[in-house]
Image (cartoon, rainbow over all chains, first blue to last red; front, side):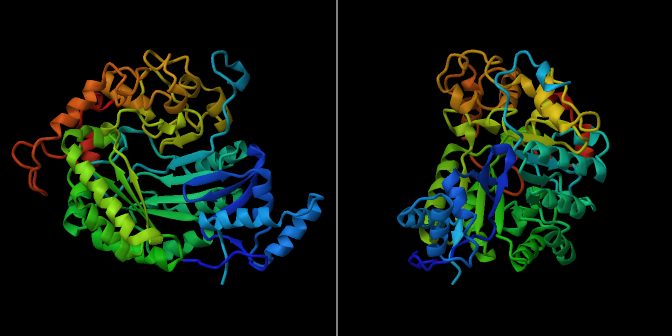
Length: 94
Length: 390
């Protein structure tokens, strides 16, 4: 079980068995897993595609804020990543 | 045929997101609950490698993204590896649905290298005796070895066990076995009655108390092991009062290509009368999916009869399964008789009532039971094709 608290220094990665890719036919990022697919909304796709296991959530958040010319995304990003870890889409490498 | 030649279809459907290639009907097992058509031995020659690769490219271009490689046993095709490699290169998520027979270290190594994403391994039961009886082979030891091999190559261990009257009382033992093998996911899939399973329905349909007991056992087990092993219990629709949303509606997301190249909106749909299903040897996936009369026939709700046509639930369940409606009532446009609003619902409840008879000791059926007919080339060639909706 991954009990780690998710915070600014966490470095999440798309979990083994899952694959994130852009699908032109659906005009969306999708998360693929055994015999299933989750179609992601824009913000979920933008967060997940930055989760490479090397970048911290602090840097991911800063990058998103730059890319979308906004601020104060940190709580939203952590909330989404926490949910994605619970759903096992993401893992936090130890 | 072009997509714009349609006159009766509703709004243009989305892409065939789910592509299932039934690479072959050949199979080393002889399972009595197989959904393959009972007349599989009469179908035409299998597609060649180039045909399958063309299907992959055309379907992917339309937006297909999940790929199932099934059969029969897909491992009997010696071109499975290049098929997986091309699918992976194209961006499919590739799922191998296998009995495990034929999967050794060398092949699994090659499949991993080719980019295979996922393996679903079927088991027939938790005990060697029952596993071998139900699949009419001696494969249990082999499957246990294959399960270990799958772990070794760092795939999630996904077990599928088809449940029915003769093994549903073993759910606890099945789950214990899965835990011992290190399974990450277990799918307890109650038999769906098509093909060989339809032919053997009377011998395979469990009683209601068997189903309820199995579900309680599964729940207790789930509470005990937590999320170390995820368990899915596919409810047997004969015991429900509303039908399953079969295939999310025919022609909405699911495309099957049968071994001979016949394109189907569901792997059982070949039985549906009056529809000429196209073949990938003579038509592109785009023309088949968007332009063929047989794929458009059951889209929307113009085909529906009462009580479905005026039912508010039609948007959720699409009237249930067309094949089940056809097998049970003789008309594929009727409501799936699983629905208790169907005037034919008694056909389902009567079958369930017959299943209340006492269980005979297995593996030998008692004198009151007809023998199971195992899936084999010989049986396939000699059964009356009319009886099973072929």
